[in-house]
Each structure stands twice: as structure tokens, then as C-alpha cells.
Length: 343
Length: 174
Image (tube, rainbow over all chains, first blue to last red; front, side, top):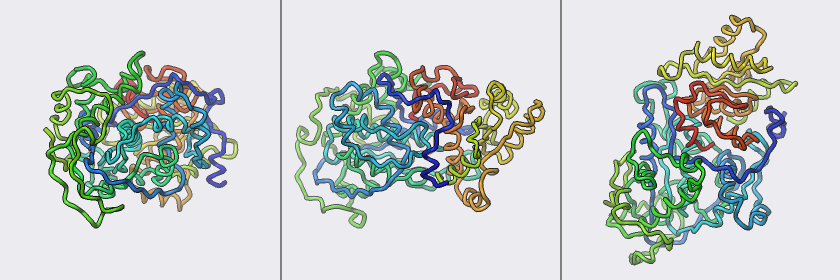
């Protein structure tokens, strides 16, 4: 039996589970949940992911050029789509978005019921205000397949919500035999292809979310040489923006918010990101990065004068107090980012 | 991974497309008390297994002989006819060599893919591996209409000590 034939087989789930579309689905979304191996604490796992999220904003413009790789197969984006029904089902243009999608999906990667429907995700992307030269990077994700899936999807969703380009996440490898030892990380790094078909992920995003640029690493961002990087963002602090509750065991996970009736749904997360992005659009005192010409792709960035705050990006009607936004960057710097502080 | 998972899956269900009980046992050396002992997990899983007309069990575990241990347990419960298999029993020699050459976490992804297709999944409540499977199986089937795992068991999934990491139930992407 060929691989393709296998994929065509009727799954072994009970037949009563027919494929239905339910616009009331809400999706849980949080930056990290822990499969604590033995002595690892939940907080430690959470902190590691939180610290791994780095937002990169480019204050000077150069057009983005991307070379898409066309291929097949992934298990990431389809899941996002399934979960974005709530965001998209009520919106107009559903049918048009669906007919415009032409993702090859001859391999469903063991998905339970049929091929994925990307139309909801496409709608989310169409509605997104994409900001030139804003990038979202999720570095050193860690854990097994359960955690990594969660973390990558969270990264993708936040990048889309912020209208940012995606720097392909990287993974922090764990010990192969020594799981359970005090530090099970080997120090090794890996790309997404450790678990996933990266080409298919890129192909899918290029088709469904064509205005979202993708870079294989921060070094591949066209204007990397003149970029400025804010400090690591403390996502725990972001969560508390909504509720005012302090961090701790009762951390208000976004998923909880979204599963409660009237909890704000996807808008809650998006609003956070918009606030965040607006802050990033302000000029900072962060020193300019040294050029790394060997790793640059795309055109040589033009030397431009710094724009005024009003012209550097967001036009979102979000008004955020300075003190609140400052707090985002004054939290613990986790994960060993190389960024410079904005505080 | 997908090819290896396909081979495991094909050999597991056989020509008759046998339905199977997918068990993620978590009693590797590193686990803490909150995960429960092997015996406690056997007891809890077996209760669910006996409640269903399934006579084939797929075991995912970092312990090499977990499937044999569980079958020994089932013999003790007077159900020796239930077959208990793991990926190590279901791969050709070449494929098994390929599998052994992979990092631990990649080997586990084979289990992930096979468990995804099980008729019933019993997993560990403190494991994001199981929680992710539970979420994905729930949301990609008609079960998505039902409340999602505010309890620890539904018709697709049982999570042993599911209350031990309830935050995953509300925060996990599938």
C-alpha cells in the first residue's frame, strides 16, 4: 500500500463522528503549556517559552522579497484553520475565499477527517493589516511534539494577529536518553524540519496567507542589517493587561478567556497584539545591529532617514498608556535573548 | 516519521482494519509522583479498555517493554487474548533501525501519529502529548460540538488524573 492510499483510508474512529462545521467553536490559545518531565515545574516551562518569543521591528523600510518553496504536507496550518472558524464564519466573503484556495492537500498527515479547509484562515489573513518590516520570531521552542505543536501554532497566530512576517521558529533539542535529568536539554538546536514538513508549511502560508512574509531566520530578513530589536517580550505581563491580575498560579490564560461565554474570543488576543505592535512602531534608542552581509538575502537595504513615529507603521486606533506599554518590556528577560531593552 | 507511522499503522490494524485502543503510558524513569505508578495507570486504562469491545491495544511509552508489561498485567486480569503492541513490534527490521537512529522526541512522533487514529485514546493527564492528542481528536471530529474536556473523559479520550494539568485543557492548540 502506498502512502497516498493509506491516507485515503477511512479512519478508524467511530462512524458517528462526521465532519461538521461549527462556527461557535472557540480556540484555546496560549503561549505554552507544559508537559513537565519529572522535576520541571510548570513555571519553568512557561518561562522558557515566554522567553523564547522575540518581536523584531524594523523601523526603516525596504521592500520584502520572498522566495517561496512549493511543496506539500504539514499538520500545522490545517489545525489553525479548524480553530479559526469562530473568527471567520460570521464574516462576509467566505465562499469567495474558499474557492480561491488551491492548496494541494494530497497528504492529510493522519488528520482524522478529510482534508483541511483553509478558508477561515484566509479570511483572517485578508482582514489583517500587514505592516511592512514587522517580524515575529519565536526562537528556541522546546518540548516534545505536543508542546511544539502548541508553541508553533501560538507563534503563527500571534504573528498573523500582529500583521507581522514570520521568522521560522527554531527548536531547542532535548536529551535523547537523559530525559528526566536536571537539565534535559542538549544545547542542540534544530529547525522546524525536526518535526514538520517546512516546505509544505511555507507553501500553505504562501497560498492561504500570501501577504505574510516568511524568513528562514532573522538573518534572512531583508533589512536585518539595519534592524533594531526590542527586548524580549514578557507574555505573562501581556496576559495581565486584560485582567490586572498578577502573575502566578492563577495566570489568566487566553484560552480561559476565550472559552468563557462573552470572553471576547479572538478579538481579545488580537487587541493585545495591536497594542503591542503600536508600541513597537515607536522609534527606540536601540543601537543598530551590525550588518551581516554574508547572511543577507534580498536587495541591499536603502539608507533612509528615520521616520517620524506617526509614519512608522501602525494606524490602529489603539490608545495605550505609556506606563502600561513600558511594563511589557520591564518584565524578567527570559530565554537569553540578544535584544536590547526599551525600558 | 510519516512513513514509519504509516507502516506501524498498517501493520497494526491489519487487513481487517481492526479498531484499537491507543494507550500512552507514562512511567518512564523521570516521572514524578503526580503521574501515577505503572500499576495505577494499568488499572485506570484497563477499566476503560474492558468497557469497550476492543481487543487490540497500541502502547506508546518511553519504556521499551511497556507493551509486554501491560500484556502481562492483562493476563493477570484473565484477558490474555487482548493483543498489546508497540511500534517496536510493528516495524520491519530496516524500519526499526531507522527508528532507533532517530532522536527520542522524533520516535515519539510516530506514536503521536498512530495514537491520533485510535478508536479510543487513554493518556496521561499531566502530559501535553496526550492533551494535544485529546484536543486535536476533539476538534477535528464531530466531538467539537461537545464541551471540551472540562472533565477528564469523553467518548474519544480518557486522561488519567486529568485534573493534574487542567490548564492544558483550556490553553492547548491542537
